Image (tube, rainbow, N blue to C red; front, side, top):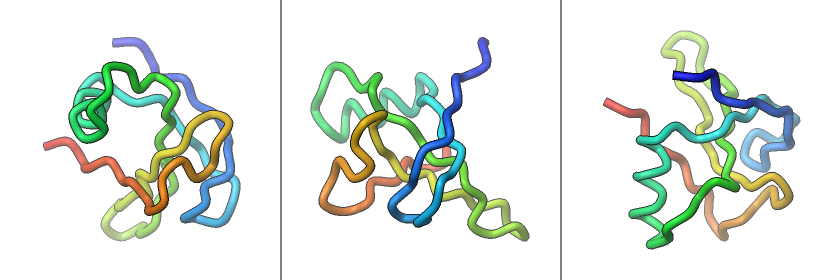
Length: 80
């Protein structure tokens, strides 16, 4: 598997510039089903660690150009 591309972008739920990465295949499949779309390549996932003890991350979605593409935050679930 190749290393996913990353970018530092503003996250509206973290209220700061954070590291974002492209979605994995599993995450893309989940988002396609949730949105009813065939393509979701424009979305980036926030990798900010919210809780250092548990390792819980933000996982909020944004696009490369739109910081808040949805009215409410859409967080990708942690893969099992």
